[in-house]
Image 1 (tube, helix red, strand yellow):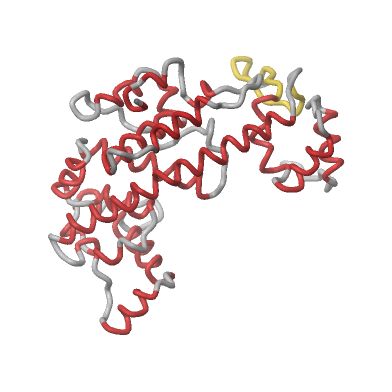
Image 2: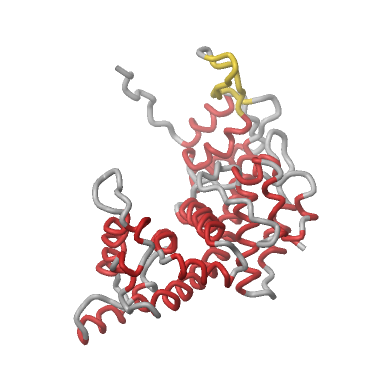
Length: 320
């Protein structure tokens, strides 16, 4: 049986003292206490973890484990710099993903609505193989998705929803329902959409259907991290973007040259840049994301390379 948690509650001053005891350099204690008060010890923890010492795993000498002690030269202010950098990074991603989400709503409503006003409600109008796939918790993929999609509509406080139900009987047609669904719900529907509809949407972006689905799932993962204010700058990307064929998106083929580009945030940033340019060719978003990473705060133990922004990344065509 594992032992219970017994660490005591600490004042902000005591939290800082503990960090200093573990070797973290604090150049301005009063300012550091203010950061702990405003941001919180728990939220700052992921940002000073890269500064902590690694030692061999006692159970496997080929692995390392992180200790509570800091490496020589680690400073509190650098953790704050990383936190602020990451905050702006999340805002940049949310800006791009909002545009992509709005475009995807239009794409799905237009393509599927031509089949039937309620095409999203029946596997007959979808990719039957994917829609009828069984899920570990029971039910099919489509049944699970529809419960979530309908739940979003039921929870909505939008005036148009109230007006619809005061005028018409349910359900809500797809071209209205899409306005309530979040990015994750849209990504699920895209994956289940009729193959011809999925291909039509992918063609708009110059992509193959599987590439489109993969990239949208990547951005849905990043959106969840960003919306919950979690650490993003060096996070592992679970839904990694597919490497496109040269005839699809030649400016993104380079993400296949190193796994680090796809398993970290670089691949997601390149994908977002591709989409926003297809949606609005005059967008300044790629240059703003590029400038943000070029201004990565200088410090020991942390760099943009840990985010998949490898040497020469800013010379790639996707950032031109």
